[in-house]
Image (tube, rainbow, N blue to C red):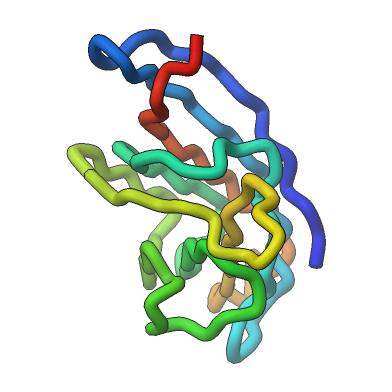
Length: 138
């Protein structure tokens, strides 16, 4: 499993005790496969609330699944978000998806499983942006 290390951008305070952080990732597309390839989203807060997600690529048919534990299957309690059939770009906001890393040794990570069904763009990079609200620790 490869690590996708976050580029972190602090956006500012989202409330009295919370702040909004933008995490940007470049995910490796491995081409068409039945299950996709899991990549660790390193550098994130161990818990938070996903408020917005954006994904884009040159591919016109890719799927992203976000999970809070490594090695789990789609459709389980550990899959916190699944988006299928993305045509170049996906952007949605107004989300309130709470997450907490569920690994035995909490690593402060989520996991993205990328599946690309566009054979003409099967090895391109898929970009993922997560806007996450976290408790302010300052």
